[in-house]
Length: 185
Ligand code: GLU
Image 1 (cartoon, rainbow, N blue to C red):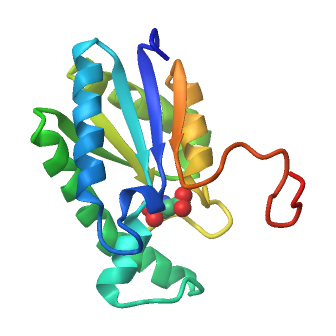
Image 2: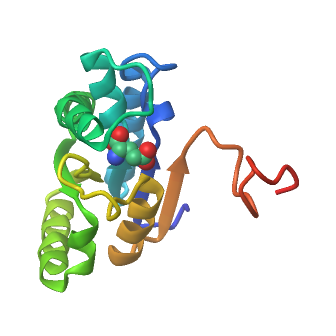
Image 3: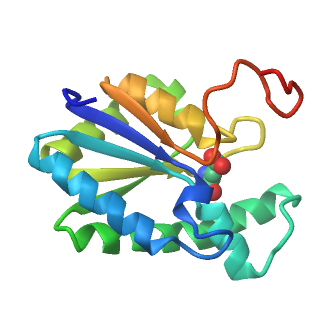
């Protein structure tokens, strides 16, 4: 990690939000401070963040997780600008510029789209901008969503040739199987 020059950090909803409440500003401030320090060492950081659906649900007053796809997509549309505004504010307090990138699975699978995305990411990194990436939940079609950003983060890390991929999550670690169905995993 010390020698890593390019790092992807994946941030889960439970990390970026405060115990089911709104965004955790203390966490975002600490993250921004650490990214600013890494940039001083010429280390490039890309962030993959969740949290849009959670924030949107809160704003719309939807409590339950089970819901139809259009409601989830609407919640993401409400929550994403709020998520991004908080990232932008937290990072700008440390002199770091952020950029929003929203992607669907198609963007990864279509070579032309992927090449454009890749060029955009490289240009942002050259300009010391931190790409803040999320799935474009509001337009992703059922069945072709990333479902969770872990996969999106892994694809970004591979395609951006990152030296390290860090998951900030409330999970206990890497399991050999599904710990919900296999207690020995
Ligand atoms: N893209 C979803 C969001 O921003 C999160 C998907 C996930 O839970 O990883 O809320």
